[in-house]
Length: 77
Image (cartoon, rainbow, N blue to C red; front, side):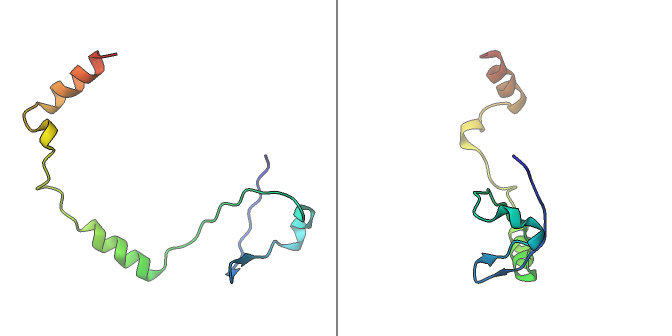
């Protein structure tokens, strides 16, 4: 498998392949899309980052020493 990289605008769900890659016409390809976050998306991520998990307790581990539990799990193998 080969890879190429170029930047393009997505307009109405369509990405135009540059002419220099014209040999790709009528071929199957796997497409990976990398995009920049908009300011609105960044503000939502920042507000989610403010969630405090300090009060969350794992009931299954409440009566166990965490390090001892990990050692026990490793010894099962």
